[in-house]
Amino acid sequence: LETQLFRAQRLESIGTLASGIAHDLNNILTPILAVSQLLPLKFPEIYSGHEHLLEILEDSARRGADLVKQVLSFARGVEGKRMTLQVKHLIREVVKIVKQTFPRSIEVCIDVAPDLWTVYGDSTQLHQVLMNLCVNARDAMPDGGSLTISADNLLIDENYARMNLEAKVGPYTVITVADAGVGIPREIVERIFEPFFTTKELGKGTGLGLSTVIGIIKSHGGFVNVYSEVGRGTQFKVYLPAAQGIQIELTPQLEPLAGKGE
Ligand code: ADP
Image 1 (cartoon, helix red, strand yellow):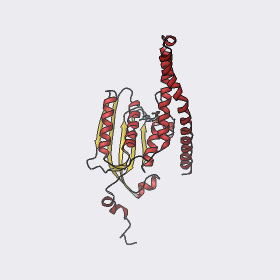
Image 2 (tube, helix red, strand yellow):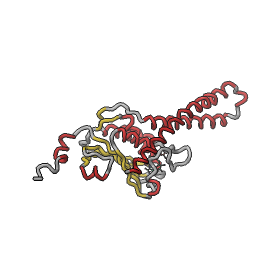
Image 3 (spheres, protein in one colour):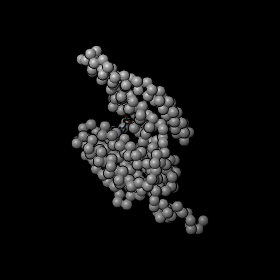
Image 4 (cartoon, protein in one colour):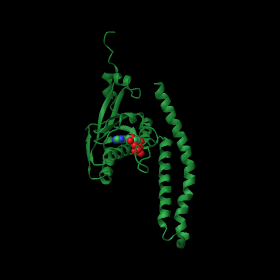
C-alpha cells in the first residue's frame, strides 16, 4: 500500500512538473511556428527552393504544440461536464470513428450487454478514454487482427473490494477493449500508466495515452485493470461506478450477514 501511495504521489508530481514545462514550452513554440509560416511569405525569393527546410521546422513545432496540448489536458484533470450516459451510445460513436480511420485489416467487434447500467460522467472524456485504448490496440496489431469492445454490468461484492483497494462495493459498468496484438511484456506492464512511458518510436507515441485514461477514470471514481499475454493480446478493463440499479440490485448483497442468527 505504501509503495502504491508513493507511486501515486510521484505520478502527481510528474504531472505538476510536466504541466509547468508544457506552459513554458507553449510560449517557446508559438513564435517558432508563427515565424516559420511567415518567413516564406515575407521573403519568397530567399526561401524558394528551400521550402522543405521550413516545413521541417513547422512540422516539429506543430508536433511540439500537439504534445503540449496533450500534456496540459492530462495534467489539468478537469471534472468535466457530468451527466447520465448510455455507455452503448458512447461505444457506438467510438466504433464509428474507429471504422472510418483504422486500417481495414483491423476487424472491429462489439458486444454490449442489453440492459447495461448507465454511468454518470463526462462523455468527451470517456470518449477519449475509449479512443486512446483503441489506438493502442491498433498499434499493437500492425498486421491487423480483431479489436473487441464489450460492456457488461458488474456487482462488486465485499470479497472483490477487499482484494482490490480501488474498488468499492456496488454496481459498476465494465468496458473492455481487447486486441489480438503483440501483448505487453511483464517487465513493462507496471510502467505503462506512467506519463511519458512509451515503447513506440519517436513521433508515434507520447506515452500520455494511458496516463490520461487513468486520470479520467479515477476522476470518475473508477479503476482500470489490464490483462496481457505476449504474442496473444491485451485486454484493458475500465470499471465505472454505475449510476443506476443501486437500490434494486444491492439490497441482497449488502446485508449478507443480517438474519444469520449472530
Ligand atoms: P503511447 O501509446 O503514446 O506509447 P500509452 O500511455 O498509451 O502511450 O501507452 C504506453 C505503452 O504501453 C505503449 O507504448 C505500449 O508499449 C504499451 N501498450 C499500451 N496499450 C497496449 C496494447 N493494447 N498492446 C500492447 N502494448 C500496449
